[in-house]
Length: 289
Image (cartoon, rainbow, N blue to C red; front, top):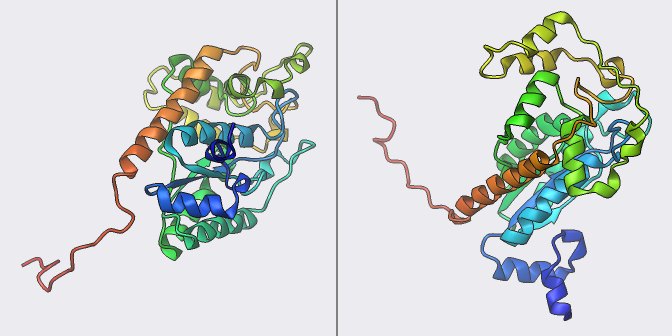
């Protein structure tokens, strides 16, 4: 394979040289930068600590190959205070994470990248990323967004997540990791797991099992009451779902659907030029009478 072809295969900014970046900005129409964000935290006894980062990178790689986007992975760490009760977790403070993300956006913008999208794979990062997006839009000339809202449509995944609080290291995350990076899943660690569902108050269980709850409000309310992970579960599995009960086909479908949503978003986004000319306001604009 020629060096030129190898260069064209580079997806990550850190794999490129300066000339690669300069050529990309000259030849690629409005390139999108995908900023992958995850965490380094416990994921039960069987999943790699970097599961969230690997998941974000996997999504980014699938998207980048089809869109000629580039990927930036600024840190392996996220905001994971709620998992510090388990060994191996490393967390940033929310202010440090915010500064890392904002500085990343500002640097990319200064080099001429006008479209920047965060791909987040860890729920604890979401509020911080939302603030980074706001600051990035205000303090740079780039358009900064998060990936389009995603809710898995696979019925088996949606039902299990809502009814069993399958939030962390359960069958959903285990299935996704088996679908994307099976070598980082140690299912043997679960063979002798004395599975006992974490206990939660009956009032919350009632919310989760309400058949009339069409909108999933019970799940959202119950989740807001849950304590730090080590106060809720001794296994590190955050939820009521046995991680051995995996639907691998549903996990693959979920990944593919998430990728397709991002691809469609970028396809539409790329029709918008980097520089927009806004009509000038006149003295009559805004008058009510």
